Image (tube, rainbow, N blue to C red; front, side, top):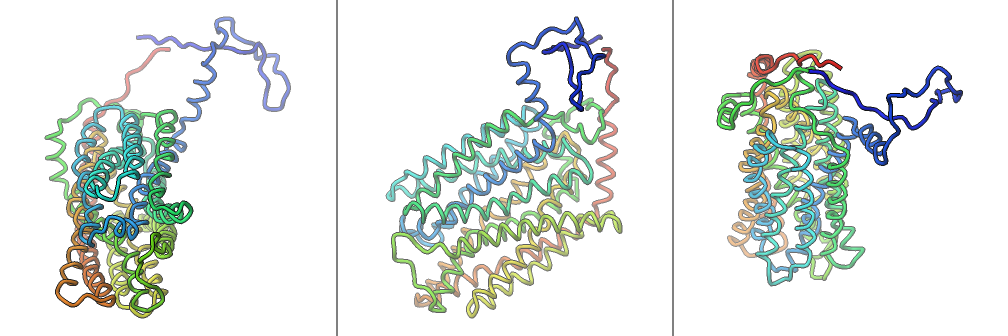
Length: 498
């Protein structure tokens, strides 16, 4: 079947790069003048490069996590405003994550079958509107504020489940590792900026509610950029090198295949351990350090309308820097280690997790005496913990075929949140409350009880390192199986006459 090419001409002469007119380049009489809008569309298509798309998607991921942790940046103010306990304030993050993880498999199913960038944009628009609306909820409606965080989780779930698969279809091999590293750098960067934005907006406006009114504007901007500039690549186009998928498997078949994929299962469990620790730390470390300063008598318990934001600002800045270092070091280390062993990806993750557990343990040893020492331990521990984020995504791309990657990402997100940060913020708050009830409440005991509760995190991190070691045992076999399945599901593209 033939195909007809259409083109247009806006000039009878063409200027060369040197600036001179090329007499040999005349306009073709078959070409018609450009209609209004055609030049714009042509320029728009030129802007839809893979690199630009990856940049826009990474920007959206920054906003996704920035919005999530803006609330944490003003957590003391929210707790004082609504007059709630540690466990009830921890419920904010738990409800957010629960709705996030329940929605993830649904968006994974949709992402493997429908236009992905439309789903992404709708998700961003939705959470932006809900976040803005939640800033006007009165102090007598805490349950409504909690509900709004659940709705935001649904909107953000669409983005986290689908956007990595677009990058996976635009790049391959080391280029994909690099672009996924940039994309997942947005997690710590966005989280850190969330603390900074929340604290700064609160201080600038004199009202913590304004912390929730900045990210929605940026979110709507990102959603528009995705609709206009991000292409919708064919699923598996990068891996198949021009091949076309002959068949698409059912959702039930996809889930059975993922359940039998040992590398996928173990890396998902390891991701849950990372999620547990980061969820608990992101929620409680600024509060823990604020209580440590009260114990050291370098600060007082917050009784003002606007609480001190120093700890949130410092922790946010540390998270940004450690996220950058962790992702860059992780990508560079993996590329270097691949020259020595093909199991480099899971092995690098395992070593970084085990090293992180050591320094995170030390936080609770030194915090009572030295805030600076605690920040040093946080810096090293977070850097090692952040090493594995982009690598874990790359492991998934290696062992899962393109037609079920959105489902795989979504289900991995579901399990990691279900076993990880869906319960960890609330669980830590619950343990802290229980310990405080056991003894006479004092500033020292409020500090110690939260520290004892947070000590659960290093043990979970060690367990995650063990799961990455298990992933390394099966990684090569599962990667080879995925490559064979791709060959079976593809065929050479049909010839097209022009």
